[in-house]
Length: 241
Image 1 (cartoon, rainbow, N blue to C red):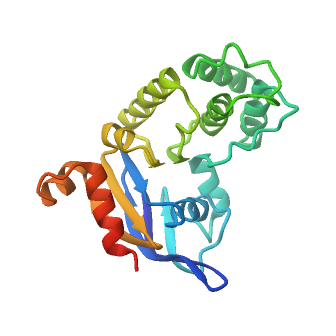
Image 2: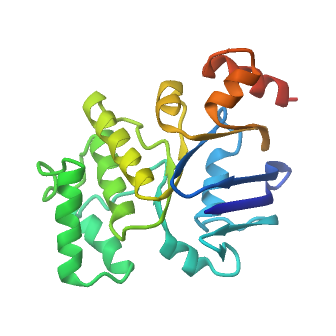
């Protein structure tokens, strides 16, 4: 489980996160939604310990993100908005490097890479250098890298960005499978259809604050049957100064 309590992050005069609190539960996909500049990516960066909060706290798998960042990093798999692959390494080498950082031994690591190659359909690019990859190819390799150590918690910043229709469908199946296996997943996306089909819970952020949260069905029912897109627009408009 991921617990966020009164989290604040400032960049000079700009308050990117203004006291947000929410929970992401195991065996569920929590959608983190918001317009550009709302604070979604900042929230994820704080959770995966790249940024330190100015106030508040967060715990992942029972570990405090500030007091025990290494323990948190062992618990999480991260797909940042920018894939950040090493361009002169092959896909296999990119994935293996992260597996070694997580302490995986060579035999189990190679077996895990083979599993991920099949799971994410990386056969055609697994031994190619990543320089020149399409956005979709980079995303798939970065996702394999995030999963290599079989983390309990996943933080995914727009994982379908650049994927074609078939790859997006495969991603949805994969996330559904991981949820069914008990993983805790936070999923940031701008695609409402994707959110509606994948997410068990929604957290909508606007201007660094929680504008709305709940299950998609409950939120739509409370909004007198509005669809998810209309609900999102209404919540963001109401919360934005």
